[in-house]
Image 1 (tube, rainbow, N blue to C red):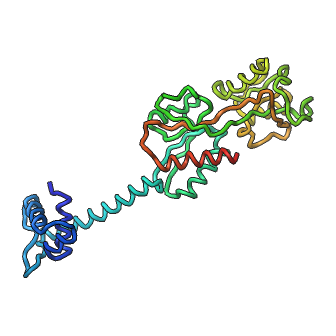
Image 2 (image 1 turned 180 degrees about the vertical axis):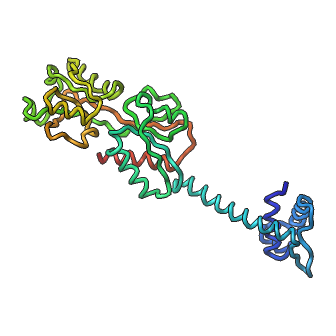
Image 3 (image 1 turned 90 degrees about the horizontal axis):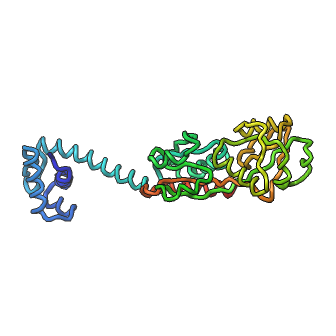
Length: 298
């Protein structure tokens, strides 16, 4: 096996035209350079240099290996530059998983900020494959970051949680509803109303149910839609009222009014989950910071 480091010594000798010149360039003694060349010639099975006056010149074998040493030197320099860019967060690739209503309000502006500051970082964006366990892909190393709601119980499970946003639920009422003229409604005032479900079972629905329980009632669901826009359609049709998070109201049905809720305010907590054991990734840190900025601006 030919030693790559000795090839670089040969390259220096050929480039400087002498062993003495190579020794000065590399900071070695001429004796050490000669030993390295002798060892390389033994590995190559052929003489690599011939004396010419006070200097040396490469043999055909030496010229061939010098050419390869040049190519290896360039590749090593490129590798060092690429590694420095990666470690500085200037390049890299992130796999991000998110749920639909976080897309427009959080993920999109965060990606825009990341691209502006780190244009060499590529982001693979996909909807969460398992809504019941959004952190699974992160724990298994198939994603670098996932957005989820609540799930404080994940702490200590090999992941790190970063709280991004408290997303309050708003009351969606039919136009002409008895409470539509208010600026806000007390949650208990909806106790006798039929409810239009807007969430899948899980942390989001739990946030609604916990708030209703704190207000002294359990909502009676007349319709289950599990989709915010569809829920608004059912409300507009007079089938009930609904609770929808602020991020889920990017589009509003013309047949509904939206009012703030108080006493208490149902809130879903949106968090970013990353792998606690993963090595430092400046690009990932930059994306988490971008998510925080997007959350503050929402």
